[in-house]
Length: 235
Length: 244
Image (cartoon, rainbow over all chains, first blue to last red; front, side, top):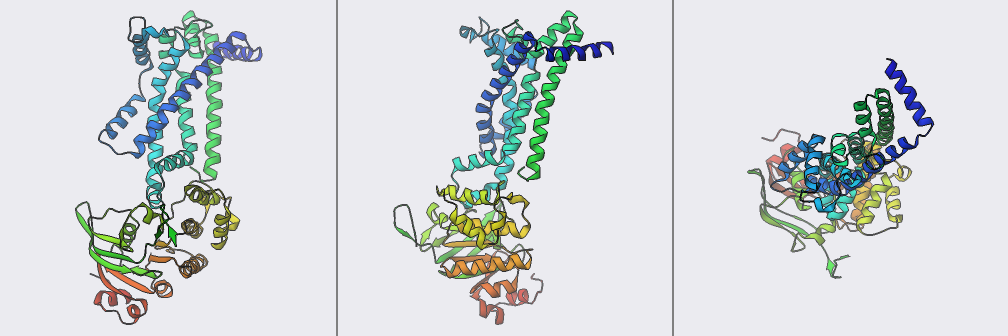
């Protein structure tokens, strides 16, 4: 109980004092998470849309693979990326091991399946709903896809937040490929792991509380948007 | 008259259906149908539930692949340009997750139009001028169907296909839709509609095509059909008897 109280006190102090180290860690966490989310969307949304509206032989198999990949163990992903980008690996020449770039790549591998699977489901539903009317109106494929994405924007936003949630809370992969190097690759989750291993439980918990607050803010935003969209029956 | 992309006059009526069959999942749904829809007419397709009315309408609209036979639009087979001269209103209105005006503007965007004057005047015609900024899915059933019709009219079709356009609607929406249908027809649009409402068919249609179990049983003028039907099935249908 004392640890918990101490942790809350410490978290409060860190936030109020705008601790420089904390700010650096926080900014890097957000930066890595947002960049990996953005890049994952660039790949995941078109892929999800393609799987949703096109019928081809391996479509169902691909969807099953992406659905399964949503539960990929981060440590395994971290290990694979580590092997790939370590000096003796096939991409060792890139020299990105223990850099934020490596962390972004690892997070993308974790987020892309979420974006693909969930957006495919959402777009497939809207595609089935609009299919006949769009065929009747002779809507060109590009305009149909734009309409699907626009009309499903609130649901897709939920998918993005799910991806962001996975990225910001992930530790296993980023600690392996980032190395948790101070002032270079240290993020919120790896700091928590480090402080725990050092026995600084209250500081670790304080960082955890701040991380939870970020997650809470993101979820609050999500619920607010959902309610607003539902009230207009846009979803 | 509408013009195709090569500036040739594109007239899509009369429509001739020749020996049309539709097979879905190894089931013969439409069986060797032949009939004709005149230029500028209103034709009602009548028949009991499951007769194939909606399927026939969707096939004319090009939504269902033809298994056998053909449909000729002024002697030409279905293509993209012919489909663009048609508009269909489905039995259940499928509206985009946007406002009423947003639904109309989507149609405009298909024709690269940015001016929404036409859209607004059509919305006024169907009594939705005060709902332009309302999310389409919050409309009542009748309003949704009127918006669906408005969207179809914005395409300025030469052929309007209506699948039970007034099913379960209140008298106000029904009258508004029927008046709009008649006005469009007076402006030269050919109309084909399916309905279970016999009095509506009498009010609107000049010709009747009666189908049962995927076959055309009778093709007649509306007047003749309701006074002196040629077939026993049609007589039974008009009298509200069960067709076996």
